[in-house]
Image 1 (cartoon, rainbow, N blue to C red):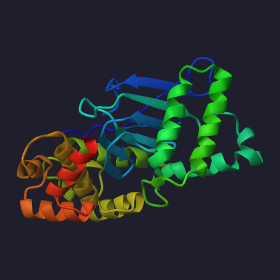
Image 2: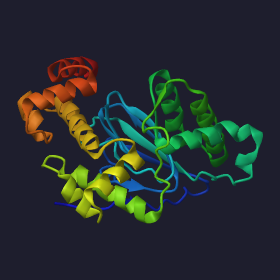
Image 3: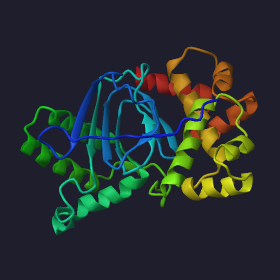
Image 4: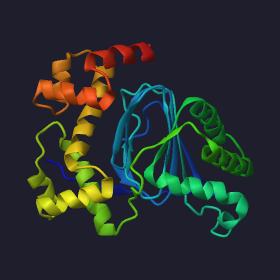
Length: 290
């Protein structure tokens, strides 16, 4: 079994700019599958397609693209792969003080400071906001440096004023921890990512981070606001959602391929998690994707 830790990614600003803009055609983002974190705030627009979102302890399945704002040192991975079917992915990285601490202290920047604070838990934007802001994000690549700066400030202000959004992790969730704690929780996230299709016991995960089972359970709940068992089940259920959309296999096969070993428990859990049965979810999702 694998026990890889999250990668602390080093990001350099684009030439002539105080922030970084990267564009990937379809599934060309080769690092998308790796758990990683960085001090920079990350704004991601996936144009079209469907796939997994894994941000902090939140796991979900998206359709018709995604627009996500990820705060400093919040671990994340996914968004696109060979099955996503997106047209392109644009990623913007900026330090929380990328224009200087004094600049963000002026009254006009109050909205953006509030946005950055909320982004510590991860934010996904939906509806018309996703479409409108997504179009602006894709224009940035071809703009001159000063025009880029004005555009990114305009985008951030619009995101703060938007009403079509969802905060992904529970209130108070933040990976602003001591480095050894950051490494521990990311080691757990990675372990689940690599082994969710097998049985995972509390004993083996607690041993992985050199803790007793009771101490680990308290630790994980304090940081993620959910139990470890719930986190693992949600990971498996989101993977099942992905398989229901992307693979023409039976629901019983999806159950076992997602790490469940009891079909009736899978059906009950899926109903509670999505509000619908697996077969209903598959029918409705296919009509959306088509």
